[in-house]
Amino acid sequence: MARIPGDGVTAHKDTFARDNLPPQELWPEFDFSALPELAAYPDRMNAAVELLDKAVSDHGWADRSCIHYGDDVWTYRDVKARADSIARVLVEDMGLETGNRVLLRGPNNPMMAACWLAVLKAGGIVVATMPMLRARELAYMADKARIRHFLCDINLREDGASAMERAPILQKAMFFTPLGNRANRAADLDVAMAGKSEGFDNVETAADDMALIAFTSGTTGQPKGTMHFHRDILAMCDCFPKHVYRPSADDIYVGTPPLAFTFGLGAQLLFPMRTGASTVFYPGTPDPDRLIELIRERCCTTLYTAPTMFRVLADRIMESGLSLDTLKQCVSAGETLPLPTFEAFESATGIKIIDGLGSTEMIHIFVSAEGDTIRPGATGRAIPGYQACIMDEEGNILSPPCEGLLATKGPTGCRYLDNEERQRGYVKNGWNLPGDRYRQDEDGYFWYVARADDMIVSAGYNIGGPEVEDALLDHPKVRDCAVIGAPDEQRGRIVKAFVVLRDATDASDETVEELQDFVKAEIAPYKYPRAVEFVEDLPRTETGKVQRFKLRQKEDERARAQGLRIR
Image 1 (cartoon, one colour):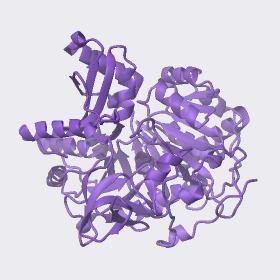
Image 2 (cartoon, rainbow, N blue to C red):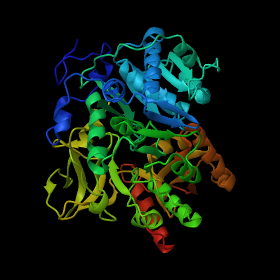
Image 3 (cartoon, rainbow, N blue to C red):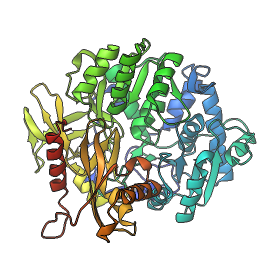
Image 4 (cartoon, rainbow, N blue to C red):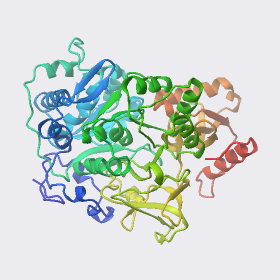
């Protein structure tokens, strides 16, 4: 077997992922000395075994609730039984070899969680995707990560089948129902699981074996695959939750982020599992009234969602007079938390929202604050296990108070799949640069200024403008376009497209709707342009590059004239 950093031996027969890591001289510096739990990780460990099997065998949590879904409750023993059966199907029926990538597609439900854990138990690499992604996006990921195996919620079968047509490499697919219901014979994974004997011989992976390839939102074109080891998964569990809000085994989590986002993966599955707690999944689209109902019904203690949802929840609570007495901690991430939202939610509930800054490249949150250490309006300080500073454009570390590019390092860090150019841009002098401009005060608190690239953060979603442009340019009526984030009172920013039509006489409200519907069908619907402006041409440099900053300036000036706050 191949040698790797750590104890030196990988458990993976398929070495594609390791072969496509960036050269080690381009990796950031990793630090495991800041916390004793990080330094204690063994050279060989399987994250799913640590989180699930040991919950049953070592910690005495076998009969504790793990996942709530509608009227159903899966204990840790139930989750392990399902994950073992799925792992058997992957290996015995689908021919999975260690190191193979497995595409997962489904909303937050018990079987999606069990599939995620099963892939790791079998020595595979998870590539999870959001339900809103379309066949075009799924096919790109399958080709980029050379994925042959595919597990998909049967309710998303149509897009799954289309993805397989677009990406012939996706040869081996099975479909599941949210609860693994054998009554649905079309759900072949459910049927196959029923025929498997109990237990599974877990693969003894190296701590530095790949466990997860998480795709970004595509800030500069197509999404980038970020690569995370088994130890990275444990590190995200042992840093932010343990040392920021200190969870307990009696906590009940609920929230809106999908498991396909590393934010949601931690918040909705792995963080509760690390302490023997439970999580609430629910059918359907996140809805503020449903969230309030679930919190009250299930006595939820921990809520994870985006600032936009917190603002709506504050309004609903104030209007209804309902109390959420069981809530102990609320965590916001996905976009910067506006001060008015923080204040409104605290006024409605008495709870100070914990703001968190994280990234897919870092796997989860690395700057935050809680309780009396919160400074309203600031994101926080580097959390235990991490360091953070401000750099100038040349990579020099600045002394606070200062403003510039935020840089961080710790037990996790950026490793892009087969993308040295992007790797060189993200990592500088051993530090990770997530692409945010911050100012740091003399006490070490970081205050958000702006994104340093063309990422649009809208209602908690990260949307890459170039990806929307690519979809629009596929429409026959579009000659050219540029996409930016325009200020919006409710969502912070919205996707706005400036479109040059092939025939100017086509400019109409009907064409706007046609373009919006087209984008919704091509990529995830939340990425569609909520505003479209037809223009004769786009501002460009002498070399032909679109000057999107001029379009942003124009929209910001328009917003200021209307009295909107720029975020």
